[in-house]
Structure formats: C-alpha cells, structure tokens
Amino acid sequence: MTEQMTAAVLYGKERLQIEIVDVPKIGRGEVLVRVRAALTCGTDVKVFRRGYHARMISPPALFGHELAGDIVAVGQDVKGFKVGQRVMAANSAPCGECYYCDHHQENLCEDLIFNNGAYAEYIRIPERIVRMNLHVLPDHVGYQDAALAEPLACVLRGLEASGVSAGDTIAIIGLGPIGMMFVKLAKSVYGLRVIAIGRRHQQLERAAKMGADELVLNDDGADVVTQVKRMTQGRGADVVIEAVGMPELWQLAVQLLRRGGVVNFFGGCATGTEVSLDTNLLHYSEITCIASFHHTPALIRKALEIVGRGYVTAKDFVNGVEPLSNLLGVMQHLMSHNGHLKTAIIP
Image (cartoon, rainbow, N blue to C red; front, side, top):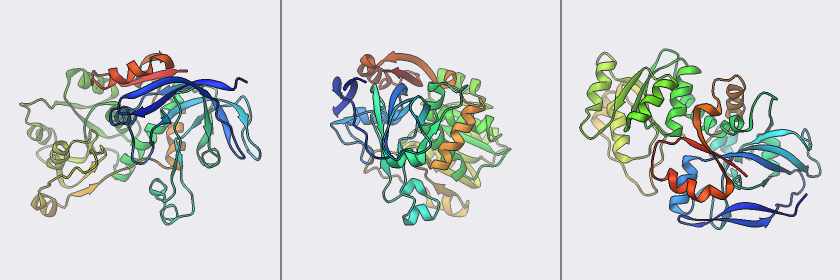
C-alpha cells in the first residue's frame, strides 16, 4: 500500500487545502480504513466557516467525520474485524467508565474522544472507536447509505430525549439536512404527525416528499404561531424541534407548544449566545425545555438498523457527488444555503 495519500486539511476560517500527506500509522487495537464515501455535514460547514470546533477539531487538522469504507489494515489485538470488510465508523466513542457513562449518558462522557479525517483516501480508526463504534455493513447497504448513520443517530437522540409517542404532533423548525432527517424519522419510524416549518418553498416541497403532513412557510410576514395553532385545534404541537440554532427561533419554538409540551433546542447557537424566554408561559403551561447533543453507541447501532431496513437511504439526502479535489468549492457552495442537503465526497 502507498505511504502517502490525498487529504483535506483545515487551517482556519474558510482555509481548506487538498494536500498530499502521510497515510496514518495504526497502533495496537486500531484499523486503517480506505474511505469509499464521506458525506458533507452541517457541522462541517460551520467548522469551515468558523475555522474550528470547540469540542471536535482544532486546526491545522484533517477534516470530515461521516464515512464508510473498507478495512485495509488491522493493528495488533484487533478482534472481530479483518482486512476487506466493508465498515461504517462513528466519529466518537465514550470511555464507558465515568459518571455519565454509568448513568447511560455516554454522549456527555467526561473523556469522549472524537475522530476526524474522513475527507481523505484513508482514515485511522482509534482503538476505542474500533471496540465500541465500528460496524461491519450488510451486503445490501451501500457506502453512502451507511455514512448517514452518524447524523441519523444524533436525530434519534433528539427524538427519544423528547419522549415522542406514536400519534403525537411534532413541529420541526428548520429544513436543512438535520431537519429533513427529523421529518423522515418522525414519520416513517415513530409514526408522528409532522408539521414542517421552513423558509423556502423548495424545502417545504422536499419535506412533503419526506412525509410531512403540514407545511408552514416561515417568511417575513408569516404568523407561524397562528398557523400551527390552527393545525392543532388551537392547542399547539406536542413536541417542537428547533433544528437551526438561532435565538429568535428558540423563542418561536416555545410559542408553538401546547400546554405540557416539550421543546428540544437541537440547533446549537454560536458560543456566548443568550436567549430570553417568557417565564410566565414556561411556568403556567408546564413547558419542558431540553437540548440534545451528539449520539451514543446504542443509537449508532439503531441508526444502522434503520438504514439496513431501507427506511432511510442516500437517495433521500445525498443530492450531489464530487471528488475530493472539489471539496473547497463544495463547502463554499453549501455556505450559500442554496437548498442542497448533502454531497458525497469520493476520495
């Protein structure tokens, strides 16, 4: 195998270069994967725009985290994996021993390790991820389909944390890739009535194809609260998901709930952001406010099962395929919010 490879290296704010670098060396318990598909992600676009991620990446660094590929080398003491297997690797793994892991909150692990470098020909999978979050793919599951498992697991975390039940009405604010995944899973897996709220007609049309029951255009003159109340016999939604990360939409989300409802502030606002909420509304309507972060190994497994059953496929979310050499242009394109969901980068 070659000793060098092509990879994307992030140097800072909108500074991304495609370079020739050394193929990662693997150690005890690790594997080397040849990347067959790496998907763009809203988090990657934010990292590209801001030049860093407080928890996941500090430049200069290899870039990208949604991937599937083939094992090409295994380190000493690796069990259950061999060269030639098709696999999906999650981008993190918890320690399994800290307070939060003991309380089934592995996504909040005190020593949660992250792995980046999917936008490359090869990626090293650390021992802990090999042990806890590397999965062999069924023959019928494609690489692009499998790479969806990581963001799907995050969405599953959001839905399960919100306590949804079949027949509930859920309102989803924001119809980017994550919002669309909420629409798809809420309808096809959880059996919810879905109200999709977006800023573009194209987004709403796509949400309808994903299964949304009701569509609300959130343009400058729209009274979104009145529309959602009308669709829910005046009560409001049982659950509201904010999947954008804007203070004004966090405030809107609370207003769309019924009494006793749950709002999930899934979209992360920029560091330092503060949001004012109506305490009278929260208190007397018994509103539950939660937020969801990341995923757990169990949810990665569940996401792969959903993909394996065909509930979610790449054709639902991947609307472009590009070589690694075009990644910079792809990131600049995605920053324009032009309605694209995901692009598959093929190293």
